[in-house]
Length: 194
Length: 194
DNA sequence: CCTAGTTGCAAGTACTTACTTGCATCATGA
DNA sequence: TCATGATGCAAGTAAGTACTTGCAACTAGG
Image 1 (tube, each protein chain N blue to C red):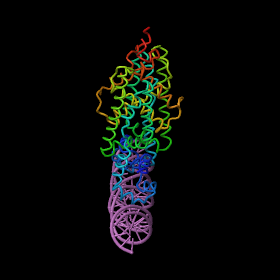
Image 2: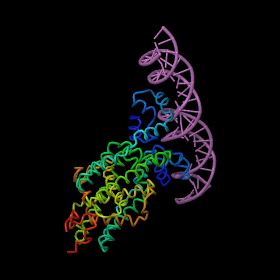
Image 3: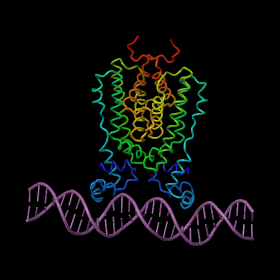
Image 4: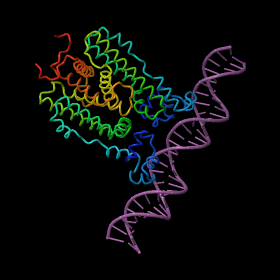
């Protein structure tokens, strides 16, 4: 299944052939077909086997003691780490979600729902502690997810190298700061005031 | 070339076959090979034919007269519109960038560089007018690009439907507001002050 | 030792794929 | 009118694809 994950990610579902997957796994092609009836089933099994498990509950307790900015930075960092560990899974999802059986589609959307729900829960916790402004949590979660995911995409998948700042923590820290300031409703809109 | 663009986007490079592309275009398969020597060359030609052209210069003049928040919202909106118009191109890029000839890779990165440069120029213009805070412009551009692109991905490509807010302008407006507040360095960090 | 289950090997099937070739058809422009 | 170039059709090639089958070798448990 690791071999399949790797090759599906590298060449796409249509581009990866069963012969090569079997070779990568160090078994005969026929063995592969005896275990996973067909290539389709193989993809399905691989993608559900390596599915994300929700780390949100654990994260919520983890950040409970941290100051707000640290908490958000930890949240973003953990999310990106998590994605990076499941790089291949994400890659396959991105590429095959729409042409593959609807199963993948729903799996991915369930994952996203869970994730955004977790972000919202995090924000709510911080709001209760009084260190996060009053804003629409769903919209905030979408934006938060947006710049984190996009950062991951560029760094881990598209291999962008031409940036001034390459230190991940620094970049995340800055994003989080902007997000935190931006959602704090005590900010004046225009610098003209005062 | 439109037919090829469409089918490559729908089924991926490996998944789209020349026979079908020709049929979609309403010509014989042999005609296709007489025009574009091989399938590889066809992909290359398609991707360079539909390349983005930089709209930044035009945008810069367009937003010159707008108040800051409007300007950023227009910038984000135009960017997302632009992506939506080239949906298929982006899809193919995302999927094929890494396995396709290095040409695609460099084309895409050049596009990103140009885009981020445009964002930076926009921000600088707004800074000169004194309505945008003092922050690292490259980092800001990366973040701005991040949440815009991610919004586009989810709306146009992944087909997310389960959100509370579906009005694009409203969402963008909120993102932009958070970004604008967040980068305004006159904001107090913690609500505790004052 | 014997049986059952797992694996590999070799060969093969039926189909698809990118790409080619030869020939006939047709429109255009000189 | 004639030549040129683009097109379609039909057939074919060579390779690759997912997937199957039969048989022999091996391993592990009773």
